[in-house]
Image 1 (cartoon, rainbow, N blue to C red):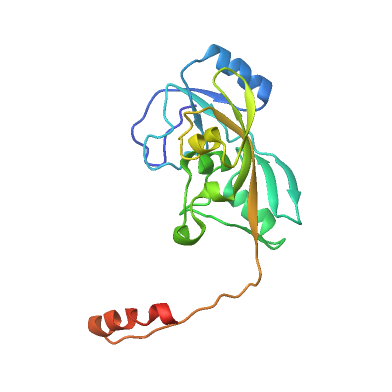
Image 2: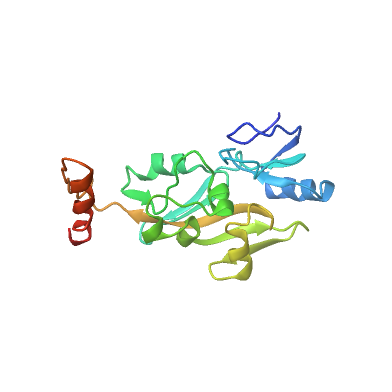
Length: 201
């Protein structure tokens, strides 16, 4: 098995370790000192490429969901597409969704992805309450929002350790409808003129 990024370049011959349990991961870390966690391979560049890869996608169980708070607890290999498939029919949605839904929760945290509502909701770390992280020495710790290691791991591209599972806050879907305003213009000049009134709408 040889894993590459979404761009298929560069291609690096690598040894792949599948993340299946915490005990297995500890053994992997004892044997390999140089590694990188790898989610579903949708990074544009070479952010998750190494000679030794810990493939986190198989670590994909849903652990718990609190319907009162909207907090979902799941393993790092769960993909955003799987969350949407299960929870949209239940009336819940992700607060932050990037350009693709085929990424893992661990990858979303490690890259601190954002979507089209970035100016309102911020990056993915804004909806993360806490996560469990295994450090290079095999020690497992819980990182909570505001902790220094929490901030270093969100957007840290897998360099602080391997994310095991996370608690993320989902957003309640209030309606199946959206508010939309359509502005028709006849040319470039009228289009620019219409921008002046957009904020007032």
